[in-house]
Length: 253
Length: 264
Image (cartoon, rainbow over all chains, first blue to last red):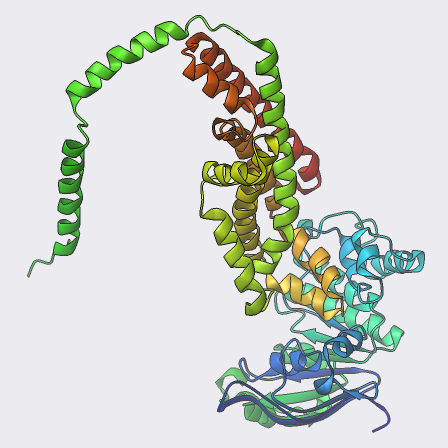
């Protein structure tokens, strides 16, 4: 399976036995570009994303990443694999009482020893990279502000910078714009797409805004009832297909 | 049809009646009567008259007792906090598996089950008279109290922040340092200074059972009917508690300066 950053095979997940949330999902994520996952609420988009870095434990199947099956990894192996997978969250999930700089350096925690991390002794290269990333996401000068003093859009910028600090081989984004206003949403999507293209990081992203997904994604995966029902280009996503994914049609008018 | 907006269950009425009946019964059993109170007041007036004016009969003993109490309080708070940090973490059910939380919670419950004076009596018997027994007994009390509060504070944190740090591949100790501690640090400082305050008060008491501090001096003065010296000691204790209050406020100020902006 060359040419894919992530390869999910026959993934199953059931939180309670007999009520599967994900059913036999198989898909490949290429080494570049944005793959957007759309679908109605409760269809398992978030579960799928979280199964990749095992914030949610899969019930069955394989997830191949960097030549290993993530599902089979032990505690240590999983920790090392997670270092290479960045994640951006819907509610930003910044450590509120830490500064912006400390939040960015959280992205390096997998690489520095706990002792040095507690003493805030990071390699100079990490610190310089953090400052330059703050520039990139438009938050230069915010390094020493506490995260809880930022607006939603600013917090998500910090969230993105934190993920990029990991120098990930894959970026997962779980509804990164769902808590933001429409204008900020576009700005955040612009940022994700720009940063990831320039760093060559493939993105797997959950979205509930179909228009935004069509505008930014290179490929769209439509999920319904725990299964993949559409996998193709944004252009191929017509009304009939949307009807299949979301059901009903009144909302399409 | 008219409906009743508020209904009272007969069970509630019965419970109130039972409580009232018990209060009357207990009062009669313990001679808790007005006449008894009036004779008591008489006695109290004589007592207060003998206390005034306060007189420092043994300044050296007083000073030694006070400094010893202060030392007991500070050392016990320090030991108690240092020990309860890991125990509180182990007892937090949202971060630790059951086989870790269960023993930690049992230990905390054990430390909490006895009043410091009872623990002090045990330690006096075990390690002998003096400040060591006081320090140990107040440390035990501190572990019980702060350990429980630490655990509860950790159980109330936002797991989203922890999840984000975990997703970066952070090792466990870094996860604690970055995902957990920042969320609870200011509350820990609050608990710690509160415990210092409480230990300061308790350290004046453990001396009564021979565990060091001003309590021993106070008790001896009581037994010699030196009520004017008792009064002087009590005033000094009040002074020490107030100084302790100022000290605690200062400690909070130093540590929480960075975290003054709370919430949004």
